[in-house]
Structure formats: C-alpha cells, structure tokens
Length: 505
Ligand code: CA
Image (cartoon, rainbow, N blue to C red; front, side):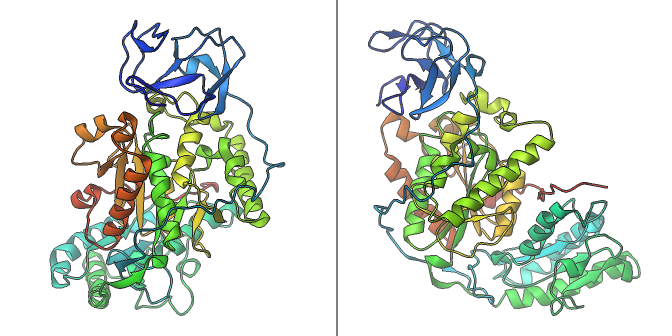
C-alpha cells in the first residue's frame, strides 16, 4: 500500500498517485518505470490498459481508457472517458449501517446555551440581517461605528456581523424555488452563534418583506429598522447604533457553560481539492466526524455534484427508506437544475482540481465522500433546511465554497471544517472555519493559514485515526473558545452567496 514514490489506495486499482513530482525514468515500483514526468498527485498506470478498459482508483471505476495506455504512463483527464451517471431509481437503502464506530474521547464542551433550546452557540456574535442589498452601504458604515464605539463596552461579545447578500429584490419572489433563499435568510437570522437576538434592516420597498423572514411576534420596532422610515443618513445611523446597543447589552450577559456535545452542530466541506484530499484530509475529517457522532454531536456534509457519482454508497448508509428517498429526490432536483442550465456534473471539477491530479468528477466524488466517515446517515436536508435529528446528516447544497458555506450556516452549523489540497484562504464571519490541508507542502507554504495538515498520512508518519483524533480535539477546542483557527484570527471572511435557484427579474 505504501511506497516511497507512489500510493495505491485499493488492491484492485490499476493506477497509483505520485507522492511527489516523479521524473521520467524513475522506477516507482519493481518493474514499473515512469514513461513521462508525472506531476505530484497525478496518476501513473501500474499495468498496460487497453483502449476502452476500466481505470480503477479507490476500487471504483473512474472511467474508461480513451487510448491504449502503457505501464508507467501518466494518466490525466484527457485519457479517461467519464462513466455514465449512477441511477437514482434502483438504489439500496440501509444495507450498510455500520455499528463498530470509534469511541469518542470526550462528551462535553464549553458553549453558549440558546434560548430556543436548540443547538448551542460557540461564539457570541451580534448578527444583523438585511432584507435587500440596497441597505448594505448604510449598514456597513454603521457596523464600523458599532465596532469602534459599542463593541469595546461589551467584552463578552466576540463580533458584529452584517448578513449582507444579493437577494431580496429584482427577484421572482413567488417562484417555487424562491423558497430556498427565503428559508436560508430566515434560518440565518436564528443562527446559534447569534444568541437568539434578532436585528433586521430593511429598505422598505423590496420584494422580500420582513414578514417573510420574521414571525408576527418578532416583527416589531425592537427588532426591525426600515430605512425609508428614517429622516436621512444621520437618523439611520443613530437608529442602528441604538438598536445594536440594546442587543449587545443582552448578548454580553451570555456565559459559556459545560454542555453535552449533542448541543454542537458542525459542517464539513472541501474546496480546492487535489488527489491527496481523498486519502488524507477527507478520511481524517471522516474519522473526526465519526468521533463527533459517537459523542452525540451533529455533523453536516454537503456538495451535491461531489457526491452524485458515489450516491449509491450513501444510500446504503441511510437509516431508512424515507431518508434514502429524500437523498434520491435531492439528487434528482440537482440533476434537473444542471440540465436546465445545459450542463451536467462534468462542469465540476475545476482546472485547479485537475492540476492537482483529479481527472474527473468520479475521482473527486470518491475523495469528497470520505469526509462523511462511516456513520449511518440519519437525515437528509434540502438546501438551508434545519436538522431535526442528531448524528450524521447529508445537507444538500451546491459544491461552490461560497454557496455551500451560507447554506450550512443557515442549517445551523456553528463551525465549519474545510479540507483543501490546492489551498484557499476561505473563511466565514458568522462561524470559525478550521482549515485542514491534504499535503504537507501546502502546510509548509501556508503555515499561518492552514490549521492542521493530514499530509503525514501519505508518508506513513501518521494514521488517519491519529490525524482524525487531532482534528476532533481541534474542533472541540474551537467550539469551547480555547482555539481560534487562522481564518478567525485574521478575520478572513468571504461574502455570503445565498443560493437562489429561482429567476432574477
Ligand atoms: Ca466546496
């Protein structure tokens, strides 16, 4: 399994991955000599493969050889034909419900209990939600002033975060699919890190009206500011400052307390993946996910196009037919969504993924699924839906980092674990993001951006279990406020792209 220059995942594989750049002429294994230079992370043929024959990695068929391939040849995306999409109509459900999962090393953390009794917060943040982007300019000026003049008065509050977005007006608000962005914003207002404090800023003439986001008893002058009702800039800023002051006062009285890990809900996603992601960072995250699930916590994983080619493997792990059926329905919805746009799942991977050795979406999917560990899947969510169960949950979202992030936030994750091979400085303002690299080279280069490297797994200096356990502790320490991931230290925050599959008008 382990070699100095290449790594083979499964006995049946006829390709292996270059651990480092391999120069032409290198003997990578007894009798196998590299016929070309093979870049790090890319595949080398372990035997002759005839045109039309299967190319296997992870023990699965990545695709079919588009030409005769010689032993020792470099195999990239140009040499593999994508196999047909797995059918969603004859999947087996609940046939692989694993019970021999690892014991969690601890069962509690220090978090902020929330008034709704749901998932706990792990940061104490004033979240200010907007109904439309027209108010963003005013709100951003006000938030700068709040951070300078108000935040220092309330030392128990970590931050003030505006939920700015491009939805709200100029959109087909009654289109059937408008339910997704509206649900996302409704749920973002109630994010566990926001402590139950509601603050909404509206313009006054937009299509997304406040009553679509708030219940009647919440929709009042204590929680909502309508800019068109204010007499100019100064009045707007004064009103925003005044409301924020009231909210911050209440948030400041929140205290961390020891809570069971069943009060923790976290998300996993990957971005800028490479061929190592699926054998180092993602399976380590999967092991951490198994430990979290065993401790009672809830773990979300997502990214439809990156699980679509391995969906039958997820179906087998669904606890019952109802959960499995919802999994199939979410996949069907996405197949259609892509079809309407005139593309298919081959629109993923990215050029960077391919440079990192991921030839096609099947290879990417097999690596991506590894982050879900082995636990049974107890629930499947539509984009931005809130969970009703505890355990491992598949939350259907686009794979785009900037869209998956807000969807998972809306579903209630209080932190996100982010695996990367190529490297990205991605971060979220409303929740800390822990960055795990698939390669040591990336950690060496980005030592002050990557929180944990899983690269030692490739070289044999660490096991998936060891890195996974390290990650579990880093997640719990982050949740307890003991550890701050780099993205949080520097305040690296991406814009929130609210998933809107409905038409823009
Ligand atoms: Ca992603």
